[in-house]
Length: 330
Image (tube, rainbow, N blue to C red):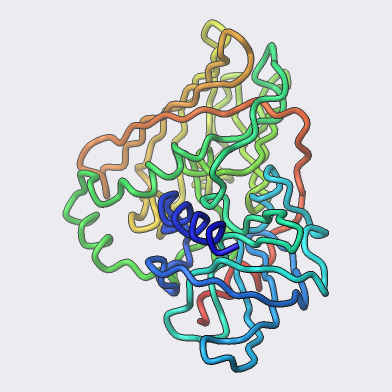
C-alpha cells in the first residue's frame, strides 16, 4: 500500500494539481495520506466533498473534509455511489494552508484496491475512444493537455499594462465561478468535462457538463440582438468550411477571470475558433485565436482535441452555489 501511495503522490504532483481554482487555499506541494472510514460522499457540481473519519499525525481523532472535483469526474467512472458510508479507504490529499480538518483531494484507494479519483489531474491514463462519428454532432471529451497548458500559460502571456496590473492584483475570491458563472470561450471549450454537440438548421448547440454551461453558435448569418448584448459567452456566428465549423465570437461581457484565472476579459474580446473532425471520426481538433486589446498585448492561440465518447452520459447536475463558493471561506 505504501508503494501504491507513493506512486499516486508523484502522479498527482506531475499532472498539475495547481490547475484547480481553489489551490491558493491548499498546499499543493505537499502530499499526505490518511486511512479512515467514509462518513459521507457529497457529490455535487462543480465540487464534491468527501467526509472521512481518520486520525492526525499524532494519532488524535480527526474528521477530515476533502474537496474534490464534481461532475467533471464522471468520464472516469465517478458517480454518487462510488464511495459509501462505512467504506474503509486511504485518501491522498493536499493539506489546507489554514485548517487541519480540510484538504484538497487527489485520489482515494478503497480497501479492495479500487481507485476513485477526486481530481482528473490525478488520473494517469485516460479512456480510449469508443466509437467514430461522421459529423461534429455527438458526445465529446476534451483532452486534458490543452486545459493544463492554457492555465499554466498566463505567466508568459503578452499583457498590456492594464493586464499586468490585473494579474498582479488577482484575488481568487472574486472570480465568477464561485457564483456558478462558468468561464467563457475558449477556456470553456478546454475544460475536462463532457460536451454534447447538437447541430440544428440554424445553429449549433454545445452543452458543457461543467456548471451546466450552454453555448449557441448561429449558422444562419443573423446579427446579434440589441437586447442580448453583451453576454457571458458573447455572440457566436458560425459557418461550415469543408465540414469544419468556423466560429467568430464577439460582444463578450466583462469578466474578472474571463481570459484566464489571473487575467480578466473586456468588452473588446474576440475569439476565432475552428472545430475539425478527424478523417477517422475518432476525435475532432479544436483551435482558437483570442484577442483582447484591453488586457492582451498580442493574440493568444492554442489547440486541443476532443475525443468521441458516445457511451458517456452527462450528469446534468445543476451548479450548486454552496459547492462553488465554499472554498472562499477557508
